[in-house]
Image (cartoon, rainbow, N blue to C red; front, side, top):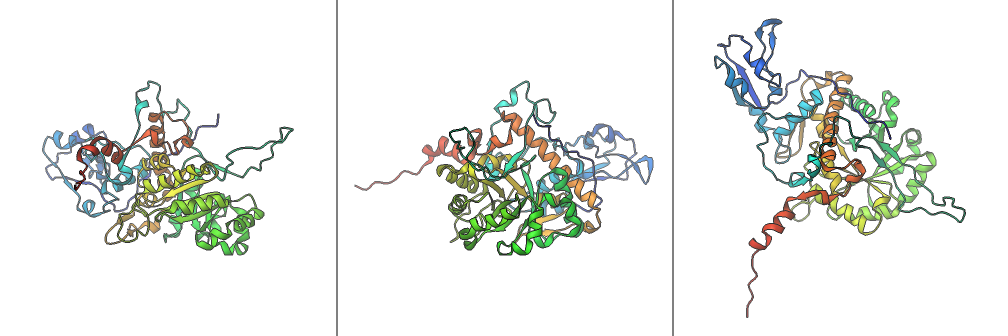
Length: 470
């Protein structure tokens, strides 16, 4: 049995301005009794203002979980709580303000978040919020996720696989096997188009190496100081420029190409050229447009090893035509997966998906819909204080002072975030009774989709009757 994968987290606070859900203010009538430090289990309240342990420090609002215990227990009523104005303005219809606070906290300590007030949000919504995972195994007395007493594998395999093996009359293998690469977590980083400060980019690469996963970067963004972690980088190279990038291609384990009609026709030749340079996997990056499953099928039948389907950052298909309602990420993935299953080539290709992967639970949900693994970007930037505004267009606002952060700080906060996500993945898999991440793929029987349940339950009752003219 392989060694259990573990992510070392370390509390890494940032002294950068960030949003908080609540602003807790300590009034002048505070008598520094310390009652709030005793009743708050989230360590929002501490002593030590100006280095004096007799005085109460300003509340650490980022840790507040809205339980109101400190407000109720303060003997002088010196604490006041209010919603932060910036909190209400950030994000948009998909990236909710609560997501930012959750991701920031996870990046700080690497722990699974706990909310003192309980869950008060909706039980369904668009995208991944409209599906629930089957937690029927949670009642098992031996069920164990993050504590490690049961072995749960989160590793996934990248590359093209054979759907059957052929042997000769001497029982010798005739089939030619394809090279594959295992990574211990079904998440890679994708920063092909974002303009990042050098320290942030270096921190992302170091985090990918520390986690033993990959980061996808434009070939032009790879600098000499990244040479030590080159095996954890997937460069995006123009497929016509392979010859000009031979040294780079030889040094990596996988290389990516942007899809277009010409690449689709010449893909076998491109793959052959790459294979001559080394045991390097090839990835085709394709936007999640309407009917993308047909294109994915052609690529798979042509010999594609890994196909990266890229949806919009809000978890919808790209370039919806004619005012049609855009398909959601989960529906795009299901369409791609089922198309490949119907044509009996699903096991021959790896499907990497990105777009709208905002929270830890979105990773197993994307895999349940049919992806082999996922790619993320925005959550990692939120970990270092970046703000996102959706309207009128996508706007990323980097925190003031982020360019002065040490590479180690950037790295550790991203490692912490992935540590929290990995723990939640283990919990979800354990509660579902699934012991290998590979088994999550396409396991829609272990999920409940709101629209389908709603249609089965109430569809016949509220369906409009058709008028028949005689």
